[in-house]
Length: 134
Image (cartoon, rainbow, N blue to C red; front, side, top):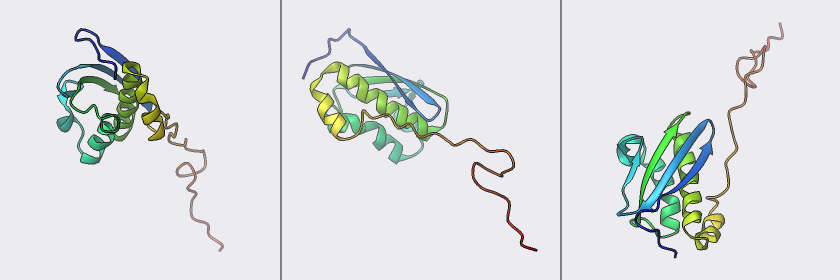
């Protein structure tokens, strides 16, 4: 594992749905700050926090890096997905050895699913009004 120098900060960007997250990684004790809030205070569900920590857990670097993240757009789910991708990309910049493990767990693949647009004449993207035979 390549050690990050104390003054070195590694930046990476992740996107999911309409959310964008910029992550800044440096050596430290494992503190994660999102938009100037603690991770547990910012994200309301434990599953989102587990999702965000997945790249760190898989590479066994949970308490080795401090992470500062700026998340914009979308909701909590999109921001959590964007942050997970950004952390995974930053870890690859730290050491190429992590790339194989992260790729095997699907953490470097961009989830490109977005909400389908509403069509005219319909109630939602695909939902139509109820059909009346008589």
